Length: 162
Image: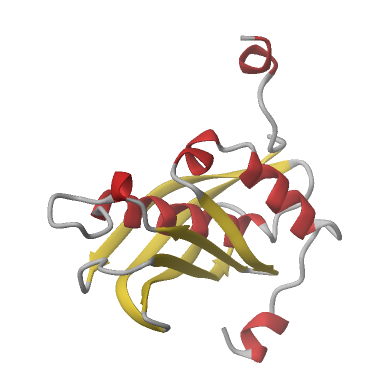
């Protein structure tokens, strides 16, 4: 992300980083796959996953579904950083292109918001596979999201009591 792009987004919540990290920490599936959040900035999010055999497909590469999962989440959280306290976000659609096998030690998804709208937001995500100290672009994605004003990002009462 360039300095001009970063400067164009002003978070609507001063505690956007803590709020974003808190939301991410409540995603059980992210914990299940060992994902962690890296850098979080206004309109930007990074998600990292270290390789384990449980995350591989039959050739020993990171599974394409995992690559898509972290691309989707990184794109959503990039947009989430720009939302007010009383809002959350849901993915409407994402298009992922696999460019190279996920053959490496770690995946790093870096997302930046391209458009932060009232009805739709769009994030661009590049997913890199790290191997022997170098990063190779293995996938790119475009994520379309729906900001949900009036729906705070916290568990609903029903799911919290279950």
